[in-house]
Length: 516
Length: 109
Image 1 (cartoon, rainbow over the protein chains, first blue to last red):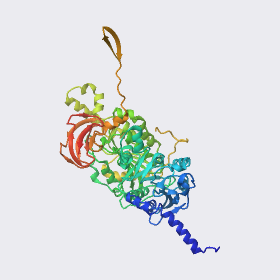
Image 2 (image 1 turned 60 degrees about the vertical axis):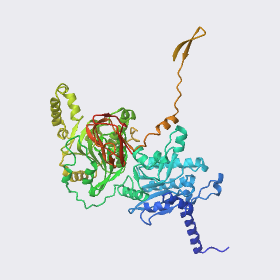
Image 3 (image 1 turned 135 degrees about the horizontal axis):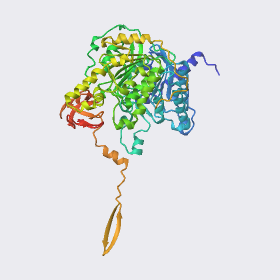
Image 4 (image 1 turned 30 degrees about the horizontal axis):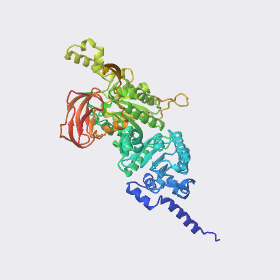
């Protein structure tokens, strides 16, 4: 037998690589495209910088002999894994390949993902998971279940150490949903992504409810209603661009500061158009994003959870090149009140920022907590407590700007001085009080309030003059500075610069017990 | 449980009658709920409050973001917006009405 030449060996390598890259073959790839979906490797190509992705474990194969599996070949065992660069910074990713036995998850498929997770954690690199899978590979039985468990376990160990992003571009049903659920950000492509514990057929059989897969677990269902997803994108192209944009704000791991991006937007830039933006009449609403856009670098703001609990706005921006996490009440939606969903949304975001050294900037205009039995019985006490907990626990720089209303418990919850805010600013129209003037006057001036409407109004005005301003709180030092709205950007940047090397210790413990 | 006295051939009998209601299976509930207009084509009250102003009438065209009415709640005048494009087919409230979370405000076609 002749010893093969290097040319022959290279040809053999190429042949093997090509056969894996071909996935489930041209027919299945065509079907994938007809369904409006990209293939696993096309997706990785869009996520990473051009030509920067190095695939590993291409030749991994399943070792299942049950049923027909002994005759089934599964290139790459239905998942592509590897590493590359995103905006020049390394990251690791896996992409399930729906064209290979439906992207089903078996022992070796899961093993490739687990191995990648271990790598990401050890190297301190962001991990991006692209999910497009029919679910557990039934033929592999408990080995498949074990595979899911191994992935969840590693997602949990990596939580707060490296950013973890889940991309849903296909089905994700049953146990498969829990890996995305443990990660930091979930992206869904409209019309393609479906996520549920039990699909429409089981729902119909078990509880008799008729609902389509899209209504039950589509991108909008999870971005608007359940809050399980944070980004809904119209196309896969837009989705991968947004993931890249998000990563540009984040550090590689919890030991690093977020990357700085030099800006031409002057730190000293004032903006007089901010002055009339917040009406001095507390009954009038406005769009809080208009304020954000005028303050942050180049007006660029990447909103997270845009469609969920819209009465609070959260997302990433930069001030003088440094990443900040913004949390802002939205008076335009539900008066900007706090409720169960808004508390959950903001608390989760605050904890992410704290884990990854991203300073918090909180814009406050909050009338209070939403009243009603639905909220009380839904557990608004427990959920609202998460926000207090998250802010108190956070040790990153905490800057708070009170735009207008800051009443009662909601004032405390929105990163007040008392929860450890480092710098508290206020606009002149700020009102920091136990409650609004109408309610407060009704209690303090009970007798006078029973009189004529003029007398009533007079007492309300008396209270407003005395308490509905920032100066009572400023007298106590709860507010550090009352600023002209036009100076908002320079004032926040000055505070951020001052706090850049903040160090604050917390008592030693295994972990706290956030009120879940 | 109701009690009756029944006389048969001159002989009185005491009988108690229990009314048995057929337990409603969740299946039929879901079936009954189905004729409701699909979500998104109806604007519902996002929180409890009082209607201050209704800005549309039956037949008004709306686009996503159009103000359909103003709800006073949490001491704020809250613009209630349409979330899809269409035409108003029914208006369920008038100024001064008190509404609760989830109450239908307007229907769209």
